[in-house]
Amino acid sequence: MDINFEYYKIFYYTAKYKNITKAAAALGSSQPNVTRIIKLLESQLNCHLFIREPRGLSLTEAGEKLYSHVEIAYRHFVNAQEEISGQTDEERGTIELGATETALHLLLLDAMRNFKTSHPKIRIKVHNYSTPELLQFLSAGKIDFAVITTPFKTAKFYQSETLYHFREVLVGGTQYQFLCERKLNLQELQNYPLIGLGRGTATYDLYKDFFIEHDTDIELDMEVASSDLMLPLIQSNLGIGFVPEDLASPLLKKKRLVQIQLNASIPMRSIQIVSDKDRRKSAAADIFYQYLKANNYSKCTKN
Image (cartoon, rainbow, N blue to C red; front, side, top):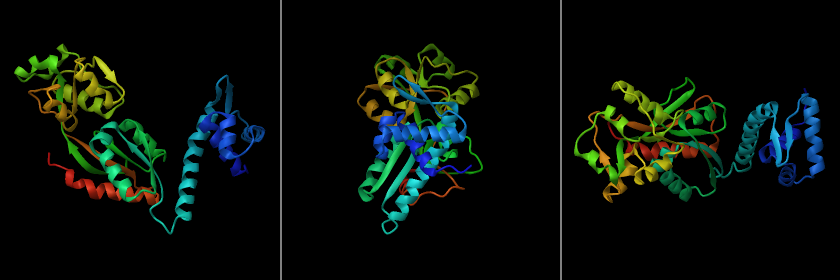
C-alpha cells in the first residue's frame, strides 16, 4: 500500500488536536485541505479514523491504533531532523522523559534545574505517570527513558541502574500524636484511616506485599492518584500514610506531622533509571541520561 507520508503528518496533527481548525493552523494549511486529506487516508486504509462530535473530533478504534504508531514515528522523525540540522551543536534536541511523582520530588526537580543551567538549548518533555504506565510507554517507544520507583518487574530488554535509595516513614497529622506512645503492629493500622496510592502503582504493590508478609492486608480508606496529594491530606488529619522520609522530614521538624513507629521494618525503596537497551537514544537524551548517572550515584546509600 503506497500512501503519501504527508497524509500521516496531517493525520497526526488532526488526531493530536482533535480539531480540524487547529490542525490546519498548525500545518499552515486550510480546513478544506485537511478534511480532504483525511478522507483520502480513510479511503486508502478502508476504515473510518474519526468521529465528528459537537465539540470536535474523537478517534475511532482504528484511529487510536494508527495514532499510537504515527505519534512515535513522528517524534522520531522530528528528533532525527533536530539531530541532523544541529549536528555541529550537540547541545540541542528534545528529551522525552518518563518520571514518577516520587522520582520528580526526590531527585529530578533539582537535577533538571542544574542540567538546564548547563544545557539551556535542550528541551525536556516530562511524562508524569505511575511506574507500570511508564514501563508501557518505554516499551512502546513513547519515551527515551524512565526514572521510576521500585518495585517493578524487569523485562529482558530493560536496562536499569539505581540512582538513589530512600526510606519511607509512617506519619499522621497532629491529631494522631497518641499513636506515637508505642510501636504498633501492622494489624493495628486497620483501626485507623490509611491514605495511599491505589492499585496499579508500584507503591500499592510494595505495601500490599509488606502487609501480607506480616499476616494482614492493606485496606486504604482514601486512595489518591498522585503522591503529591498524600502530605496535604495527612497534614489535614484525614488519615495516616507512608511517605518518603526526605519529604516528611521538614514537616516533622515543624511539628505539623508526627512519625508513627512500627514493630516491622518498612522496606527500603530506590529510584531507578530504566532504558530500552535495544533502542538507540537521541543525542540529547543520552546527554541527560549520562548526566543523571554521573551526578546521582553519590546519593546512593547502603541498605
